[in-house]
Image (cartoon, rainbow, N blue to C red):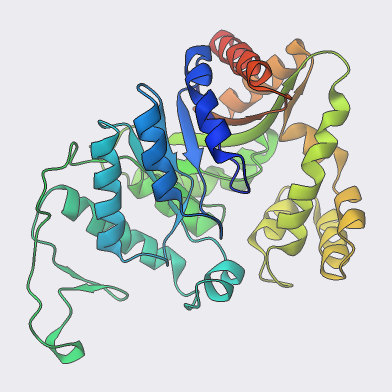
Length: 348
């Protein structure tokens, strides 16, 4: 398994980048740069590319509604160029609260849009004259919708690679099926290995059955907080606010993808309680209602033998890249955790 690490989008970026060389030496393979409604990810990824040599860099994620498909492709090609072929394009739909609330565009047809964007990106990277006639994107723009002066164009520059890896964040069955069909990588959230087959097994199999033979095996990227040692079990409580935010607050009743996932994992009553509390403004109570069992199963926190067991469960469930958040107070501590989990992952 590869070992990755997400960057925090709420602060401390330059300090973290200063430490990336240390994490590289410890065995970190890839860093994921988010773009919620924070600073943009692209400027930060370019900065990382200039500061590192071996480390792979991924957007984690660029939202599909915030850029035109061709700009997404141009950005990916530019990032791959400045990083000497170390870039992975991570994309996802985000949710209506962010897309409509912060960007002011309709959250509509995420599945179909994603498929069209992937097709357009790959045309751009192959330096073909881009021509796409879809339900959501038409390139060039038809004459009746504009001046009529648009014509097919191809990217001026020669990309480092004509097939930049595409990673798609998805948790719904139809979305996951599409990802398994068309993408190089899949990133679910709150990956619970013991339930992954029940929740995603059928859509993954259906998508892989239609997968192009030219694509590599699907890279499954699982996120997990990380702490290794005796007496650390209660550190899972630090994960509570984030799980409560997603399960309880990322969407309205009946429109929360993460709440639906918790229900599909078997936590129906708990998901209902968390959402009710969160939407009532009781965030601390919502966090307290997150089941300890869920927190432990989506984490890599505990003794070395326990973490190794959880790694084995993740590998058995198909995980090929671990996106870990090391719980340590300083860079040397985080580097040690990266080194430890890298060694343990090699042994399972």
